[in-house]
Length: 203
Image 1 (cartoon, helix red, strand yellow):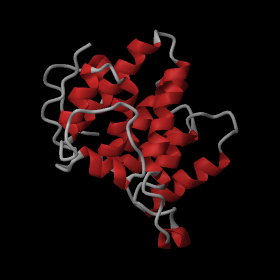
Image 2 (cartoon, rainbow, N blue to C red; image 1 turned 90 degrees about the horizontal axis):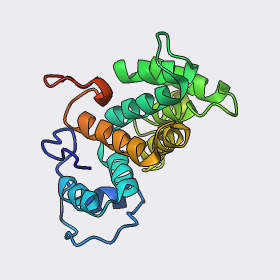
Image 3 (cartoon, rainbow, N blue to C red; image 1 turned 120 degrees about the vertical axis):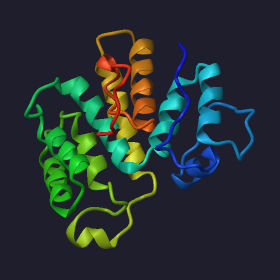
C-alpha cells in the first residue's frame, strides 16, 4: 500500500538517525539511506521494504510530543470506542492535555494514569500526556527530566494495543495507524477514516 509521505510539515528537519539516537532507540530494518537522511526519506525506504513496524516506531519518535499524544488518543479510542465524553478517564485526560497543555491538565492525566484499572490499555495515552513536556510529571516531578523516549514509548505501546485489539486484518490496521500518524505530521487531525479532501487543522 502506498503512503503519502510528502509535506510532513510537523516533523522537524533533522536527520532521522539523530532523532532515533536522541530517543535511545533504533530501527530493526537495514537502510541504504545515509545517516544524514531526513525522516521522509527513511520513511519512504521503510515503506518500500514493507517495514511497517519501523515506520510506526520512527513516527513515534519524529512527531512533536503534543501531536504524538493526540495520535495515541486516536489509538485509545480504537479500543474504548468513540463517544463524548470519552469512554475512559485516561482518554479524557489525555485529550484535555492535547487541547490545553498545562499544569492542571497534566496533573489530571497523572491522576487518571495512577487510578487506571490494571487491564485498562488506554492508560498509555494518559502516560504520554504526563511526560508531554519532557519532565517526569507535574508538581515536584517537573524538576526531573523524563527519559528521552518516554512519550514515544507510550505512544508506540498505545498504537500496538490498538493493533492487537483490531477486528480487521493486522496488515490493514497497521496501515491505517501509519496513515493517521502521517496525516497528523502534515498538520491534519489524524481522522483518516473519514478524511475529506479539504480536511485540515491539527487537533
